[in-house]
Image 1 (cartoon, rainbow over the protein chains, first blue to last red):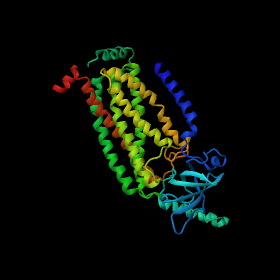
Image 2 (tube, rainbow over the protein chains, first blue to last red):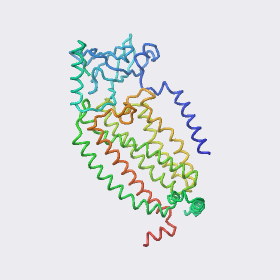
Image 3 (cartoon, rainbow over the protein chains, first blue to last red):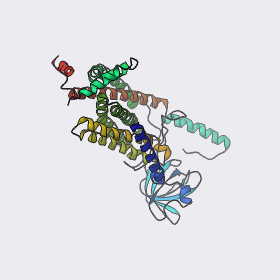
Image 4 (spheres, each protein chain N blue to C red):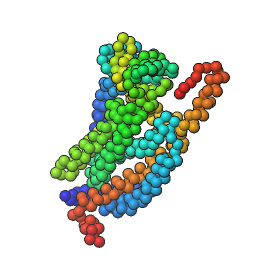
Length: 145
Length: 262
């Protein structure tokens, strides 16, 4: 009885706390939230999303790089000077730390987010070939995943 | 430190109904000592065999990942460790609750036997995840919901051990720490669902998904073998630890005297 009440009480407390902290527990803001003005302006925050295909522009002379981040609804342009993680590529989810300056997100750190898929290279090659065929028949754009 | 009231109360309840009598044997330290002595070595053998098979399959036979290459192979340690960190906490909390409600000494000792092992599994999950995080994510640590809640689990284990052992009277310590263990159970669903409830750097579930695992079979099979191996290892070590703690707690009783002096 006492144990039951204890568990009930703690569960309620935890639920209330977590609901109250909902926004603080999220690791990053999405591009949509940034466009809606939910992200703190002029302050450092984390932005997460997918790197838009074909948007990565690397400087030929230094480590400056710029790319677009999307959550499929909105797009935010990110600028970064530094070494990107190995898993950084177009179409990949990333989380980046920085702040908005003149509508552009200036990143201090870029982290790659790994997805929940584990496959041997042969399988992805086969998938890519199947995709490429589909795109050829549809006359669609190149898909570099 | 002998508490005869424990065995008396379990004897009394044992006579209440024969249907549950088999269950009451688990409450008898002497019976439990013999039981764990029989099963611990068997579990250890099964675990050792599965470890050899699982590690060979995972590190030699399984193909590299299409993105991460060979670094993903740490999941064969990381995922079973993370699972056992949560599973052992759950078993520990249930044992502590049984000890708290029914005043069962063996349950208290079982909970206390599990705690350090659970802490080690949690530590392994955190360290292996961190080592994988550096090449994959680009950082050893980030304060996202999954990583933070798993760190809290480590603190819960350590807190449980500290609280349990900080009283002169064993039963006071067991009661106080049982409350902590039960309260801490709330952290388990938070750890598991953290990747769904919030934006995290840690990826979502791969194996325990409604639409089936998103992992190639050639990698999933060694992972499952390692998973079973870890569970048998856990059972074996817990039973061994339980055995030695039982002897220590019951050192003034006749059955221990018989065990020691033949």
